[in-house]
Amino acid sequence: MPAAITEEQTALDRDALLDVAENLFYRRGIQAVGMDELRTVSGLPLKRIYRIFPTKEALVVAMLERRDRRWRGSLAAYLDQVSDPRERVLAMFDWLGDWFTEPGFRGCAWANAHGELGSSSSAVAAEVRSHKQAFHDQVAELVAPVDARVTEPVYLLAEGAIVVAGIHGGTAAARHARLGAEALLPATPQ
Image (cartoon, rainbow, N blue to C red):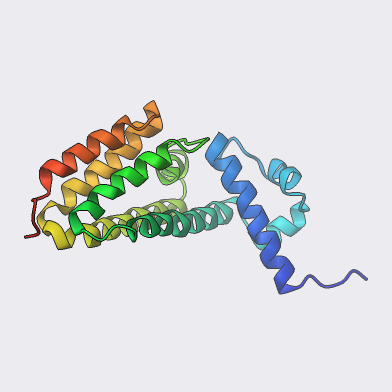
């Protein structure tokens, strides 16, 4: 009789599977990657995969949730290095520019997932909305000490830069969005 799989092993298998799924889904698209390929690349039996994630949709949602925590955490850590409130807002665009030049950058994982599955998966659509709301809240918290009235335009500049960079690549969208934010933000907090 085989040994029972421990909670620790399940957590390790879950993380490994999420790593594989995130890499393949982001690089190639969710619908282009089948469960058999996930099995092959992860080295986990299909039965084990389905014990961890009963559906591909559940795997996609978990991958997006984890990516959200890591992505927004990375942004927060970057901004924590800047003390001036106005400069913190502008630093967000510098961070975006750095992200846009990472190897394999393919735009916004949540917009990509929504484009593929948003109309057919309420769970994926809900996770995408959750991420976008969390990012919006993060931007609102960032902008409030400077001038809360420009929260929406600054948020839209950031989102627009992400979309444009996903299509065109490079850092130009982040630079242009930063210039737009500079024009919107008062020189001294309101």
